[in-house]
Length: 223
Image 1 (cartoon, rainbow, N blue to C red):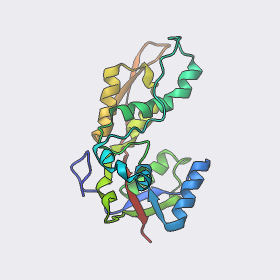
Image 2 (image 1 turned 180 degrees about the vertical axis):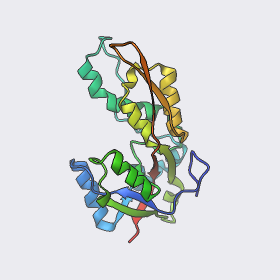
Image 3 (image 1 turned 180 degrees about the horizontal axis):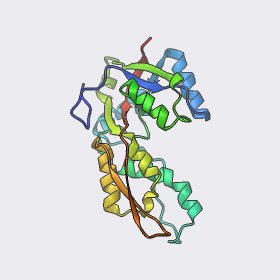
Image 4 (image 1 turned 45 degrees about the vertical axis):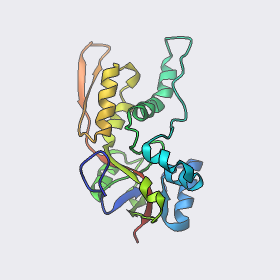
């Protein structure tokens, strides 16, 4: 099986950090994983209850975004407001530019394709990725119509972390489109510019490369 966005075969083994996060949703996900040592993406989980949506799912006719941008009365938002909405705005932008048949970040399983990527993620973000939480998985085939719904894309997650740090609402539309499409195309490094308010000078920053796999499907643990 090949990836949707890159001319490569999917990895035989996926590496997932399991049991991270303290929210109720993270704990529920971890509880479900412990029941049968599998992880199910949001889209596939919903299709088991609504199989009549399988065709729409395959064709990309599913709406994932929980909120859409609202036209406000005032055109000059506060810094607190922009800080609050920036994280979701990044995700909404990526969802807006996502090719319809690709897996959605709002629904997929996030995984790495090799152990070295896990090590790099842990070094870059030690508070987020604990190497002791890594489990190995393989893609599960159910031999049902659900298998037709499997979708996997390979993207550079460092493009997203760059977007989180750049106040994307201040970018021109063409720049936002370029960055979002680079992510979905599986592009490597991208460059962004920021202006220093004190000096007026622009500083260019180039993103790192760390590839994540976005998976709509079922992963079962390899013992």
